[in-house]
Image (tube, rainbow, N blue to C red; front, top):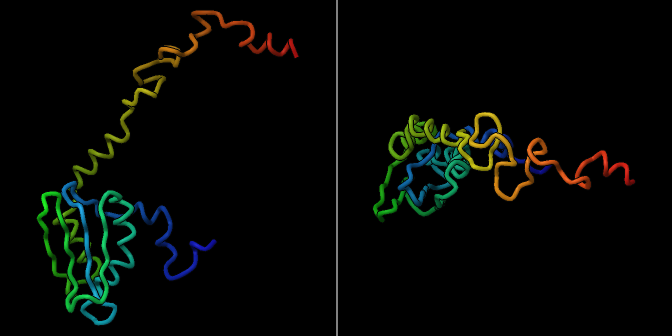
Length: 167
């Protein structure tokens, strides 16, 4: 299994990706991080990219993520919003956890909003659902479906005891 090779293969598991804590607000469209591969001041940015960038991309599929290496003397994060404004955050000398907490506080959705979105996902209001606790009790209530055998008797070619006799 090639996904279990390399440094820290845990980063490639679905459980790890789902545990990401950073879900951006809807107005964030582009996330950019700039850092160098060398230097102690860039270590937190390197660690953030190594450990949290995959989770960030998994939790925010509609956001463009750009990583720029070896282009700046100081590490920073820049985010562009839908109204073409941007915000720049200096991350020089910060650890990966400090960077993550700062991003959650400034650009992340609150826990209340995330809980409400999760509750909306769980709702059973889908018209394709039927059964106890849904809008429809039986599939036969949908137009174009075969009616219930308790209401209208099925044709003999659709009933098992007659079909098995023919064979």
